[in-house]
Length: 468
Ligand SMILES: Nc1ncnc2c1ncn2[C@@H]1O[C@H](COP(=O)(O)OP(=O)(O)O)[C@@H](O)[C@H]1O
Ligand SMILES: O=C(CO)[C@@H](O)[C@H](O)COP(=O)(O)O
Image 1 (cartoon, rainbow, N blue to C red):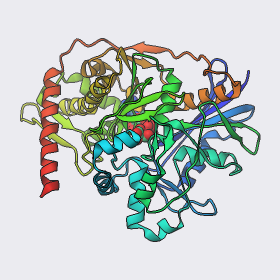
Image 2 (image 1 turned 45 degrees about the vertical axis):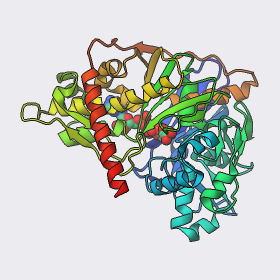
Image 3 (image 1 turned 180 degrees about the horizontal axis):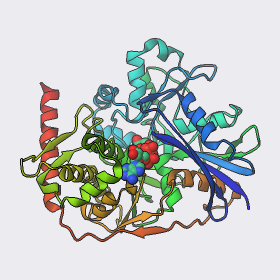
Image 4 (image 1 turned 120 degrees about the vertical axis):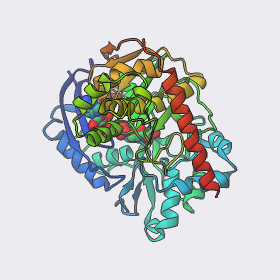
């Protein structure tokens, strides 16, 4: 039995799975936490990877890294990190995003060029922010990498020229999934001069070896890795409830959405991954639990004690600002509070529903872009919540399956490593067991309407204050 390792360097932690390369069975695993910050020294990820993989890599023949997307890792001429990486959920480059959209002639020009409309999450806007706000640091930058690119390069003992893959490259804003090519003119427009970018490796390529001789596969972005780990096929839409909330599917064709809702990402197999991402998912529940002075289990019990629609309470869960819709400076808001419904169980329910209602809009948007939706696969930390599982099908409006609890990003990275090791044309067949959640019987149309009205009102307020 050959062993392969998959790494997930996600927002809140690093996870490592060691798997049987033929079956995907997880034989051992580790994890280590990351700090709660929106800028992180990549050395912290490296140290978390050492801790999470400590004692696990004996006998491993190949490994790959799945990483949080979009993070800006800047290197100087000696390959040293210039400044802490700005993460996907850092909103300081929102103004840079607006400027870049205007300069290129609008949202359509961006989706035609690279399949996405700049928002603060995307790397291209972070480069503009760096050039404008930290010119001395910017002068030292010679190369831009993403978190998984940097970790793969570090794992090689810095012995290879840095690489990336289609999936992660498609979230930069200077690589197009539709054409499979860099748009270095856009990078230069953002940063003011040319800098180095990593080579885009093929999906099943071995890009190098660790000093111990473990083969390194290309790695990919965390959402692309999750799609591979789940073996998502036609009709499957993945709804991931981690720090971010994401809705995505593997597609045969690229998308072009100038509204900016659906990003035209690439997947890890040579296909596409239309994706909607919100900044606020699992941490909405932790914040609600803190507010109520309870733990996550009790929050779930409280939410289940309420009724669909949370007795009229609606939460817009923009606690960390929001990306979809593009409201980086917004905050969370609650409406519909009365003396009669002001109860802990309704607040808990509004938190669960608010988190899912934004993703229901995302699912509709993905469907409108031609993605068939037969079922949603619910993954990520907050998919462990019984309340989330109970209400998801009703709110999303589709059957919902919850794969057996697991780390699907790390599993997908391990599957990519097994694929690269095998030299086969397709990834190995690994099966994933999933539990079907109760089909929807409750009607959430009223809750969805109230949420849409509340959101539209907040968007109008925001656009008026931006104009004044
Ligand atoms: N039973 C649960 N109910 C609700 N949230 C949970 C539960 N278990 C874990 N979480 C949340 O899941 C999140 C971590 O999920 P994960 O998918 O690993 O995030 P990320 O990939 O962004 O680091 C944490 O915010 C944690 O509080
Ligand atoms: O920005 C995106 C996708 O575009 C996020 O999905 C990040 O990739 C971080 O993922 P998690 O750590 O929340 O899983």
